[in-house]
Length: 112
Length: 114
Image (cartoon, rainbow over all chains, first blue to last red; front, side):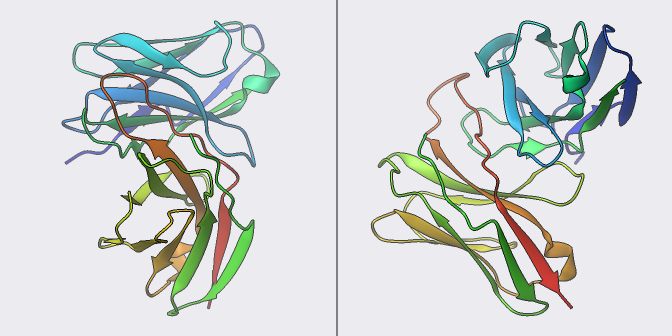
């Protein structure tokens, strides 16, 4: 049973560029959340998708957007990249009706 | 969600039990206690959760005090692979689609010593 998978593993972008990160949830899971983890900090919630809609959003600007597909996979898009967007981006999935979330290995984004 | 307080760091000898405390004195009656850990540069890993009864699974045991204001995560026989940051998170009962997030604090950095 595959767990949560994310791609790519690492990514280097330049300020002002746009980036798309991808996530496939654990089998049987239908809800996907995205988190940003800066170096030395705990993960911070960006947003959550369920039934292809954004259901809840953390304190992140509109430059951060997402999408969920009918197969429950998800994308995180970040526009107009800033140096401060450099972080580990984590995807987590869960099954409706259950509280525990399962995290992927993350995508390490470096903005230069 | 209720706020949690954890010691910033702890050491534990390999093979001994690791007892990680968490204070959540403002917890509400319908809020669960969740524990996750994060090994360096990996995604957080779900460990266990509970409401008011003690819980045990293949990874750990969770002891919640009777007044629910604190809890302890117990790793019965710590190994070097248990070295990680452990997060205690209090979260309300899931109630329908959407409306769910985990709020991570700074956690406890557990170092298992050979």
